[in-house]
Image (cartoon, rainbow, N blue to C red; front, side, top):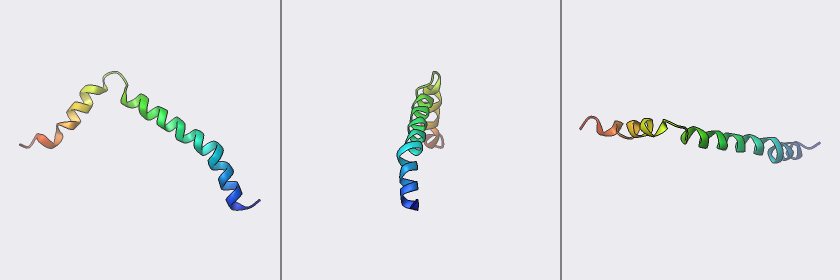
Length: 50
């Protein structure tokens, strides 16, 4: 089997599944309960020295 063909089959199957699961996990992490206050605190970090 050619290396390109093997990598293409991997990318079409398991890599796509992995990227999809990562995306869903990132969305769930951002929209979890209680994350709004943490995001607002992080957004204010550059302005704290003023």
